Length: 106
Image (cartoon, rainbow, N blue to C red; front, side, top):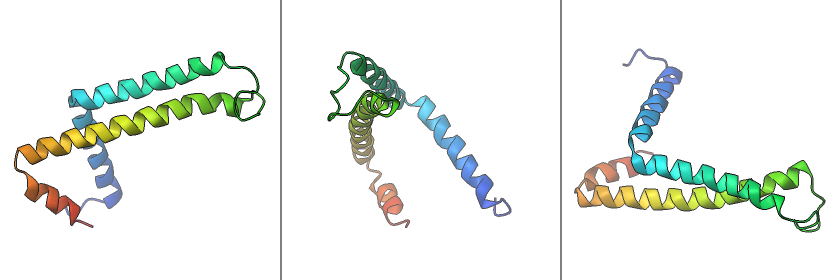
């Protein structure tokens, strides 16, 4: 493992995290809800008038603001809930030494 190039080991960590996320039902549900919020944001911009976004005309930039805003709000809230749920699960299983190790890693 010491012979590996750090760049390639970063990819192995990335693929490992993707594999772990694909096994977690909570993570997949939060990804699905974030995508759903993006679609709702796209639909919400269709029902507004041309001057609804702070007096700007309806351009591709202002049309993209709706889905981006919906996805950012939903994604940040779901990420916070998912993080709190996982940390409480780790706390219930008495894995505080692992949590402290990851906090002091920097």
